[in-house]
Amino acid sequence: MDAEITSLEERLTSLLAEYRGLHMENRELTTRVATLQADNSRLEEKLDAVSVRVENLLKRLPPEDSQ
Image (cartoon, rainbow, N blue to C red; front, side, top):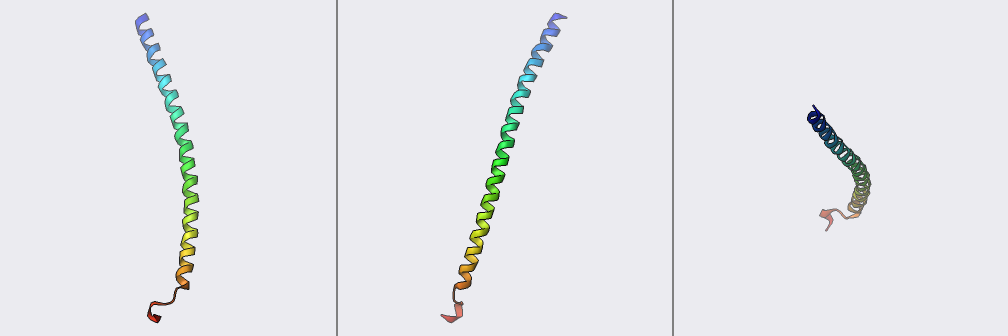
């Protein structure tokens, strides 16, 4: 009976350690996802701004048939 209790205590200790590790990893990944989402939004805004600038530059070019 004591051996079973000791075995269960060891298993519980192991599971708690694994839980804590996974919990920490989950928090780190959640933070990383938030950072990447913010970066993605910032890059999308830059891309939109560049697209507008390119479109405006293309509008200023003379038509091809007038060369």
